[in-house]
Length: 457
Figure 1: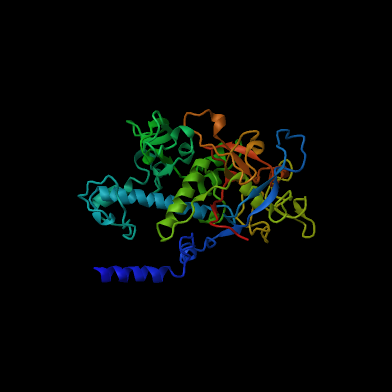
Figure 2: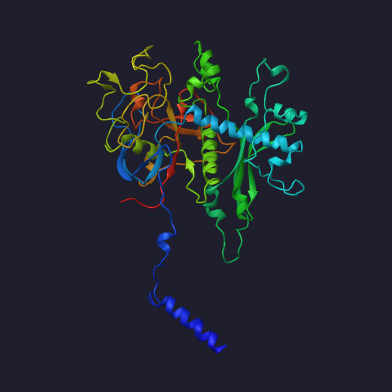
């Protein structure tokens, strides 16, 4: 026994001889525990910096414009172009397939699930490696898959995906509720305070099989209570082409813009802020489920991040390019896709949207395309008139997760960049406008960002 003790003590002495005894020495492997946050496919690294945030040019037509002020933004990755129809279709098809897998499992095709079919678990883990046999002649299989398409009186003679069934379900952790003083965990009593509760939205199907979202107040007993369930239809609203542009013939775009291959590289539109949020969640899960090392979540940019990225290296710039004009006088061409004058949409070679990267053949100083014109873009920032003056001067953002029962004016989100239908004022990097989070438009799209881990010199 004594010999064993001497051996152990000797080993400990040897292993610690290279470290100061009794001091907080750095672990020799600590520098190897992290990983290099490499640039994601299709994104650019926007390095940290300081800039003047807000619109610079005075404009009497817009008296509500906020004053500029100096702020700092940390490094992040940003999509070099707006999310395209092709990229968003991958999301829709994933949702379609996930529903198809579950329908097949429900009719006894257990080869599509990982878990034991006799398991008492409520959750079903899909075996994605098992490809769906869409042409399987089994009657039960065909009946299960047919639920994804219009049928009966809704069937117009073509096998068309039922957009109403494209429901994406996910859970979010409500950090805004965690940070509330009333919900601070008491480490002495090992419990939450008496009367602590979380106010969150939850989505469910009612007795009529209708999707309902409502705000609930839940007694806080453990960390699981901070989760809330989101379910929403993620198919783009194609009718927005005819509903929002009245007394105009836009039927072809309504029918073809999202589904026709000719529009593959065009920016996706008809997507609400809520749908864009769901896409970001799906994109994060898509990556994390196929990689060992988890990454920071994909998300919508804050207003400050978006504006900082648009201005490039010239932090006082008006537009995402040099100068204060929307025309390249040397090449005699417009630098973006926008409305030049009343009734004139074609001088910039476009009418409505154009494929991403059509303008600014050379991207801005941050390697980004279409940060002005083509389609305006959602941000994560809530729109209130004075948010510029009350937010912090480092990573400023006014985030408000509106509840289902909130007044409609509290559901406004900042939109940046201007679009094909806007005049040059809205193309300025500092200009801000808004739209309601549940509303989709034929001129609003989005791009994603991802926070950078660590610091950059």
